[in-house]
Length: 327
Image (cartoon, rainbow, N blue to C red; front, top):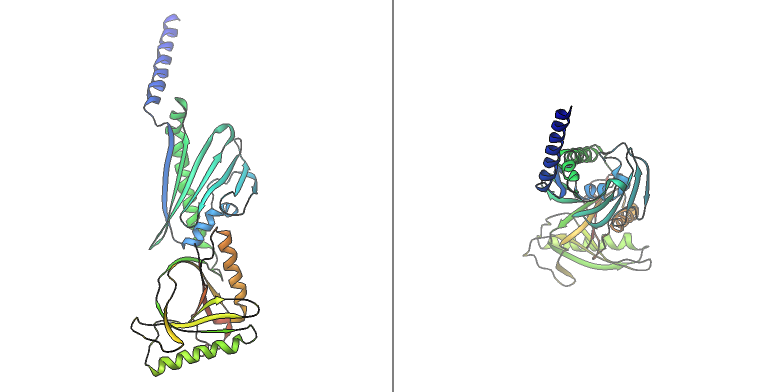
């Protein structure tokens, strides 16, 4: 009996030594990163992560319950708490850099705390999303638990979550309004500026385009794209607008017809489908999302008329692309 006890003590000592010595050489933190290219546009992908209520549709953790939200709906300060089979937890977005990065803190109560970050990198084939995780691993048992159980479990969950995100975005019903975050290239515009109140707008704008079109015809100038209206100012009493066509760099204007350089830089865009008179609803949706994403309007908005009203008489089929520069 004494011999057996002595053997057991030896085995226990060896196990303790392995745990203590092995823990010295193990990482003091649980750190990992999982990446996946999501086949969706950058705006939709970022919004699905930046707005915590939208997380429920792709989260890998479906066993949570009693979810509650506080703070802003999206971006820094957005907070989510939940209950689960353990002690529940809390997630807070601590930093949100639109279309680039989101940082969060995670509090699992007695189970510990952690930090996470999700990075976004636009690619030709979609958006590469990288999900990072970091938490302390206490010496020595915490380090063993981290290597053998926690890290593999979180890595598996992150992979599942990114696969879910890809699936959700790819199977979303086609939206009438599809917002995009774009890097717009500047281009020369043959332009003409005018002003009108709301009542006279339907009469003034066609005259501006007609005058511009006549000049282009007389000088054999070919447009390189769809007609554009840049809104310089907008009010209930008077609106100032510049209408134009994309042209080659060697084109010259005359008098009040001049060549200007269009905006170049970051912008949110949205497609409006329908009559021009209903555009205010789509503009409002675009502006609301600028605020929600933590962005600011940074210049004159503009419209690109993708459908020619002379050839397509059905106004329900008219397409207009709306742009708002942002920062």
